[in-house]
Each structure stands twice: as C-alpha cells, then as structure tokens.
Length: 331
Image (cartoon, rainbow, N blue to C red; front, top):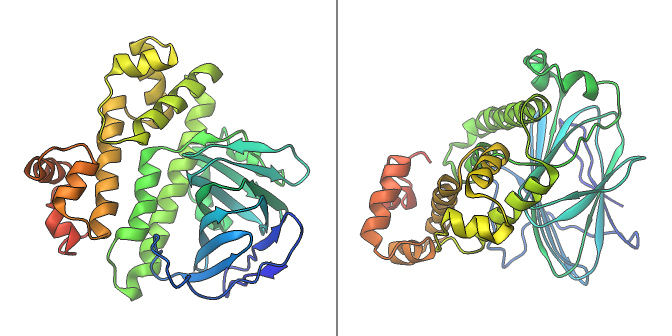
C-alpha cells in the first residue's frame, strides 16, 4: 500500500495495482519528464514493469489537487479513500472506469467529469494498458461548497445523505478546462500561489455544480445525441489543423446540422466552430510554452502563415504569442 500523506488536508490516496502490488513511488519527477508541471506541487513517480506513473499534489487547508499522468503496460487500479467532503474527477485524456464503494462501475470518457460527495469511502479507478491518461482529481472541504450550496437545490439534497452521488459522467465545459490550465500556465509568485489555486478551485467547483444543476433542470441531449456529439468532439480534436464544415461533421454521425449544433452547444457550452477555435488556441499556448517557434505552432494549429496566427492569437487573448511565450503577460 502506498500512502501519500497530506500535511493539512488529511486525505491519503491509496495506490494499488490489480495484483495488489505495492507501488514504490519516489518523491520526484522522472529524470526525463517533459510533461505538464503543477507549480507549487509535490511530485511522486513510479517507473517499472507496470509503466510510468506521475502524481502531482497541491495541498492546502481546504482542498487538494492531484494531477495523474499515466502510461501503462498492464491493467492498473487506484483505490482512493476520501474523507468527508466533495470531490471531482476530470479526464483530460483517456477513457477509464470508476467504481464507487458498493456501486456499479461507470465509464468515464475523455473530457468528462464526475462530481460527488464522500462519507469516507473508496473510489476505485481502473485503467487499461497501452493508453495514456491525464486526470485531475480534486477534493474539497464542505465549507468551500457551503456558501453557495443554496443556489443548487436540485443537486445538494441528493448529495448530502449518501456516501457517493454520481449521476453519470457529464462532458466538462470549456470554462472548467480553462481554470485547470491556468493552474499550470499562470506565472505567479510563490506566496500568492495557494490563494490563486483556491480561487481557481472554487471557480471549477462552482462551474461543475452549475452544470449538474442546469442538467437536472433544463433541456438535455438524448443519449444518442450525447454519443454523437462526443464522436464529433473527437473528430475535431484529432487534428486541429482541419476545419471540418458543419455538414461534414453532421454527415459523419448521421445528424441534421442544426440538431448537431444545438446538441453540441448543450453539452459543451459553445458551437462547433467556436469549440475548434478555442481548442486551437489552448493547444497553441501549450506548444509555445514547450518552446516551439511561431511557424511550428501556426502549422500545428491550422494556420498557413505565422503572421495570421499571431493576429488571430492576439485577437483571441488580447496579447501576442511572443509576449506570452516570453512571460511578459499574465496568462
């Protein structure tokens, strides 16, 4: 059993393989690690016959963030005990299964989230081999949620009495991804980092709660429409250089163009073209921070000329890609 003990937020993730082997985690990044780094966090890593595992933790008094990066050779399961409070899991990359204590397994697809309330029970997450996963898991003390719980009466009463309440995975709105990305990319002095993370964690929890509440009240895509727009999203993200027309995307999943755009907006909070542009520029930020040239980033995000890319980037964010890359702005 591998315990990662928090100093203030008394939660301990328990990591077990499918054969219940102990995973010896080192207290640092792998020597050749080139992935995302959560500033101010503590890294724990494993490299061995199971694959590569990196867990980054940011611990504060009222919340705890974990960012899991997994490349596996064998099937692997994590058993994560939660103390009383709220928790969320967001899949940034990869599909996997989660199993609440005493409940049936749920399939979580890339880009989806779960929001739940815990009474000190285990949440099991199971991953397949030959895949790459990026997962953000956040635990919240109840007081973070309590100040605006009255705004969400449709979900709060159902959450409170039970060990876990999981409706089913919902697609994560882009605004939540933006809040998560800012944790990695915002340049912030060390003494401000925890306060900044607190603001972004509260923002994410509020947005997830609002989405669950809205989903329980308003118009929703049918199960078939949810599958279709998920497939369309995958098509868009497979190659951001390609601008598929609404007709091409609709034909790919056998939907009417108007119906597809409406269902997509209900699920992801924006239209098809808007989603593509947003995804392009968020990817552009990642590439710029990796040190790519403007020409390379422009080419990888669908722009034939770096000057056009720079113009559109500035129009989208309000600052130039060069200023962003050199740290002359607050991203």
